[in-house]
Image 1 (cartoon, rainbow, N blue to C red):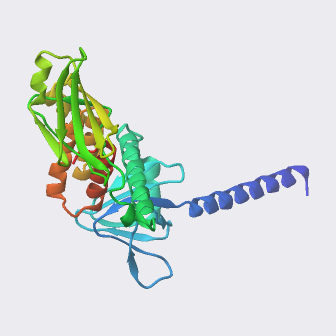
Image 2 (cartoon, rainbow, N blue to C red):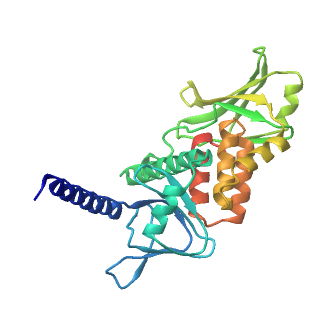
Image 3 (cartoon, rainbow, N blue to C red):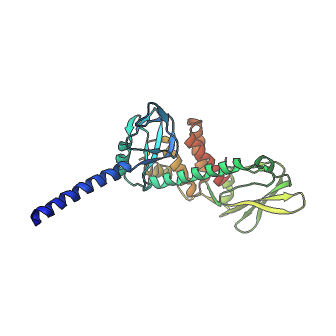
Length: 305
């Protein structure tokens, strides 16, 4: 064998090796289920039955997946690139991997990543809470109130604040102070909530309001439970709504589209506007796991219901 023949043979062997190595890597690639809602089933090669696709499940390229009417499937590759699917029909795991590789990395998916993270955090907290042996006995031992750090309000927004009393709570003090440090409201409440109607009218003469909740304990101590800074809106509501709708148009699934819009409103300190979006979603999708989990995570963050 000549030197040229030897080198040609080595080249062929190298190409042959790289082809099978690449094929093996490709076949080993899988997709992970990040969110799932509705009728989504999978038929795995070598089995005789289909099973329901569940969150965190790994889908191989040989799997055959079916999405039913109004179903939603959010998947990720090993690089955490996301893809949302809702079109009814059959897909193979290879189809999903190909769609993932060709999917554009838009700003939408940054918000979807945040949503998935917050849902997971909420589910983890819920699981931890329910696994505590003395959870029921400990319920009510601590005063609990949650408010966003900053809350911007449009005209005629209504703010309802709720809290949980402890066995040591005598009263709850609601204190509202303006930017000049003048007390606008100093009220002791015996119940578990208070509502403010058209609080934005205060902004006609004040730049901001500081709202604080204190627990008045039976032993005489007064302890801060939660506080927030209330500010007037600095955005045009109709114009901003149109901008958000355009930004998230890539999500043709109404659930993801609206949840992403709600998250962006919340990030911009308009939690009450986000709350309105969740209320509509809960009416339209009362039993949807993604909607319920997203709203529960929102309530956990903001205290708003």
